[in-house]
View 1 (tube, helix red, strand yellow):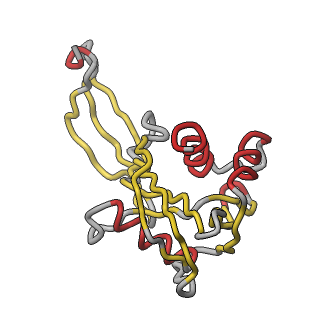
View 2 (cartoon, one colour; view 1 turned 180 degrees about the vertical axis):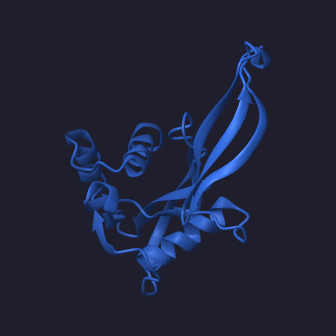
View 3 (cartoon, rainbow, N blue to C red; view 1 turned 120 degrees about the vertical axis):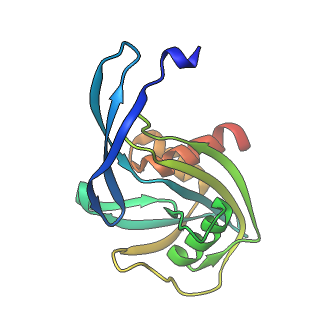
Length: 181
């Protein structure tokens, strides 16, 4: 049944490359036999962490986001690197780098494709429990991040009232509130 909807990839090239993502241009054949071009953003796999402190608060970050020209409140997140191998390894690394916190436990929460019509991005969500500040941040050269904590219910309310606009963070918070609480 899926075969009748599948596109055939006839060729592919990198149309544009920059730090963080590439734009891929594919030559494709549609199910009706029509040939055409399809471009998409290649990002790969990333992690998003919902980190709870030993006191039950959530470690949140505030980060400048150039495309929307404002500080964004969200959850620690980052891209998998080749040497990580496992998203759980990436989650532990990113939590430490972005916040200076370390978790007692990391449990998989959800995996999703946030915009699979135009990017191959995959987000692996993790819940980190027993988080304590153990080190300084180790930020990448292009990261401007401030660390804070927040009550989980206030984050749910911020999603509800639209003041927490980061889609990755909102999904993790809502998923946890709906299925894990």
